Image (tube, rainbow, N blue to C red; front, side, top):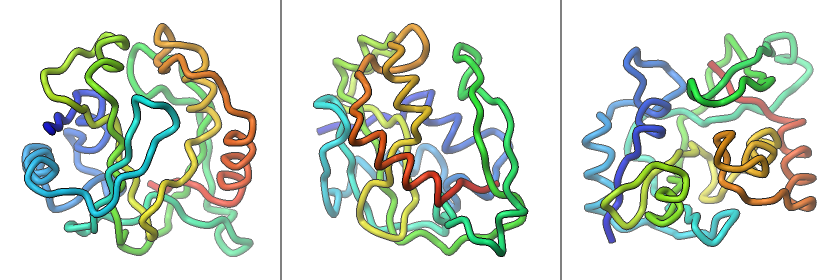
Length: 184
């Protein structure tokens, strides 16, 4: 099985100007090499048949992706409209500023099949393409953000995958993201 770091994931996980909330102590090339040289500790099914999650023990100093919202840190939440790429519509997002999460125990790599990436207009030669990565304390997926589920339901024309919303998964995501936020 071969894995390729897609341009979409590369710009988000390894931005030109390094950020504290992206993958640390590892180049994009070294990350891709690691994924191809090491078997995942665990493989989970993703939200659709074309999506798999490969769980690895964190070999970097990358910090957890999310922070629980508490009365003590609620005042540090910020929000704004952003797009993940130039082609996508901006959506409302929120994040913490001024917090420092623990180092993640796991990197949960989100993979799409070659066929799905072809359908989305991002053909690859490898069997699987990295489209994202979750940095977590547990060897499991955190729920996809509700807005990402909505974008996916809009279809590939709007930057999604074309997978309809699963109401139960959406409710779990709302519960999680109502109590947690990303950080910068």
